[in-house]
Amino acid sequence: FVLGLLHGPRWIFLWVLVVLMGVNMVAPLAFWGTLEAKVVLVTFMMGGMLMMALTARFGFTRILGLGHIFWIPLIIFLFTRWGLHPADTPVGIWLRAVILINGASLEMDGIDVFRYARGEREVTVGP
Image (cartoon, rainbow, N blue to C red; front, top):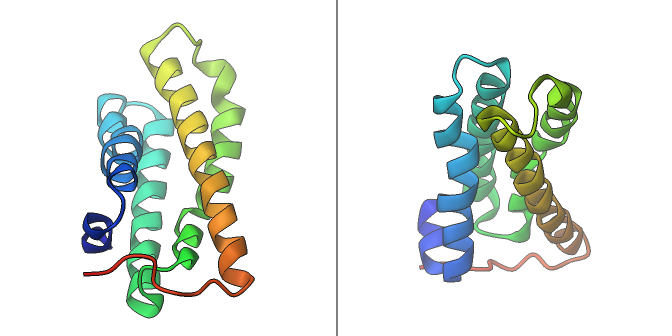
């Protein structure tokens, strides 16, 4: 999966390895005492495992958008916790960033999966 990112557009590489990994994998460590941090990190790892399986099976195709399917219940869960963390606290800022960034990613993923379902099944990047 990561090798595919290296051969794709630079912005996708930065989006995944800096933005998505930053809010979903690195930042939770700063808030590890919260349930939200644990749920975000576990969900991110589950998605990563699914992405690797999808890449092994289908290559670097648009179906990889399914790798973030776990983010739908994650975002719903985080919305239920919204009121526990005011927007002017570090945890509150991070929580809102996760919802915003993962939501934007889900939108892009949904488009990719839809395009895959409509027949765009070619490998999008490769060595």
